Amino acid sequence: MAKSLSYTCTACGASFSKWSGRCDACGEWNTIVEEKPLSAGPSAKSLGAKRGARVPLHDLSTQEAPPPRNQSDLKELDRVLGGGLVNASAVLVGGDPGIGKSTLLLQAAAKFAARGTRTVYVSGEEASAQVRLRAQRLGLADSPVKLASETNLRDILTTLEAEKPDLAIIDSIQTMWLDNVESAPGSVSQVRASAHELTTFAKRTGTAVILVGHVTKEGQIAGPRVVEHMVDTVLYFEGERGHQFRILRAVKNRFGPADEIGVFEMTGKGLAEVANPSALFLSERGEPAPGSAVFAGIEGTRPVLCEFQALVAPSPHSQSRRSVLGWDGGRLAMILAVLEARCGIPFTGLDVYLNVAGGIKISEPAADLAVAAALLSAREDAALPADCVVFGEISLSGALRPASQTENRLKEAQKLGFTSAMVPSGGKTGTGAGLSLRQMGDLTGFVGEVFGAG
Image (cartoon, one colour):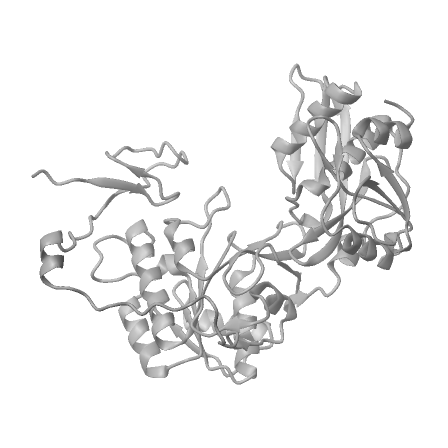
């Protein structure tokens, strides 16, 4: 029988039946390699001859206590992890190069070690002397963290078996290699096999393992997607190089809420926690200007206020430009279409630029109304009140839908000194948190009341 060959892209993980120089999925060149097939499993006849052990079954009801958690003194990290690090858990941390992943994890390792957690930090990208220099810059040279510089996973696992740490940090999973896998470090086969070995080690020994993962140019963790399914928690470390803010976001967490965020500020002495991110994101907001709208959002369990900035200018080209930073470009196109179709406000022949101040990325639909307010404010050259927050979802019919956790959003706005809010009608506002509420049922009414048009 002919041997079945499979080829996989090392950049995005796409599979192909034949080799080619360029990946059709991500467009990268010379990234497609042959995937070694796994050995054939036992046949049905052999399974029938030798039966396996019976697996115990249990009821859903249980009296087991929740898993214990190891706390660090980094409250933002503990928040994203769901309250602390769970023993025997596997955590994958991804982020752009130079964003601060190694800095964050070195600080976290020192914090855990200071609280009595036996911690081992294994770097496959830097020599031990380089890690020590970073620790000196961060003021962590005296931390009781065990350090190693190695890429051979067999040697690393043997060392961890002997040391029996409570926490092992592997920086990074793309540099690890197994001598029984016939491919280069960083390939799909090596990443998948290394992640499987480390995750199995964590479950077997009770050691919590944190893996650092590289990301592709699309922002996804490089390697096969199955790695994200293997681990218990997937965190993304986000931020713009021009901003000092860094966002640690949980996209998967078996021991806590997903979409929770922790906010850090990059300083000369490492990453500093930001206890009140709303105040920080709005700290550089000056006098009210056209094109600015403050959005009251929810990130995980935390209300966060941020500023949407819009600029609308005549386009010198035949095709208008749409540029978005920090928000979904497809959703911007939808809102522009609704404004034209339902409210009669065209943006044809106008360049539209939209930005979320502070480098944070917003994904929830409740930002629709704030985006529309910023766009209309920029187009009409009319500033919104400085003490007003806006939130609500816009449907294709032009109706406004209320957002979840309205009361928490309003309380956060009042805490920061805002006195009014523009929200869709029908939402559970409670007492309104002491704010002056302006409720609208559709986008046409919103445009008419706020900008005197529609």
